Length: 374
Image: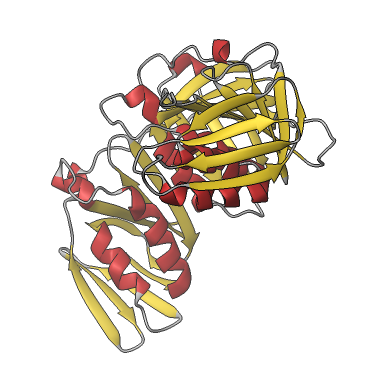
């Protein structure tokens, strides 16, 4: 293999592709990134048996070929290349990288031992990148960090015609984002469960000027693929049954309050300064005000009052302040509507554009209140 590539494009492609390589791979061969020069492109790929990444960039090819080298080392080198052009050349045992007056030599890995990457499933639909990224950000709010319960570390993705719904829960809260997309088949009806960490990673590296294509084969439902700007990721689906969470949403909420989102988040952050670790903050709704408070009687205390627009009886609820802020921060609208039934039943949070407008159902956040000390 002997090729010429743009140094910046090479650095970006290597960094994106090698992000799926584990720091301590179970099999040493999985520490490699595969490079293949063919048809005017340099194709890069990496795999860890669960997630695969493929990318390609333009290349001037003098000699086609393929090779396998240590991925993280290649990423470190390409990030620091000094010139606009980089030349890659292999012999029987090494890859030589030349850029400006810098030269690096890497030992080749046995590419015959590298596993075959999974076949990318057929395309089932596409959506613009900003819409996809926002939905992922919102849906991943409630992804669990408990690795011993893999199902809760995932996001359930339901495809139903032109609607896609992403849902996550860690048992204490639930986040659900819904968006409209363009399906290949308008009658598509399928559900998948994929790791939230992978979705976040994909959303962070999107080219927002290109659509996101989703790939899935319902007849062989073990793999989900995502394509954007020439980058292709696949992920093994999580094997397990996602909890039946729809019943957690109340049919009617007798108590509702509309609050300025920025003012509420600021008040929560200030009041929670005096709350001990894992201690709740209290929200007492009465008339046209909500009083936020935290702290014990014989310790530090804080209290703040906000104006609200409220319907229903007075109520006091208590929340984990971190969970509260994380859910509110995912709301894109300037106002939040809190919908309550009792002090112990899950509270639903929705955004709305104006103080007196209807709430948006594109993002629904449920948070279970904490029990208050008598």
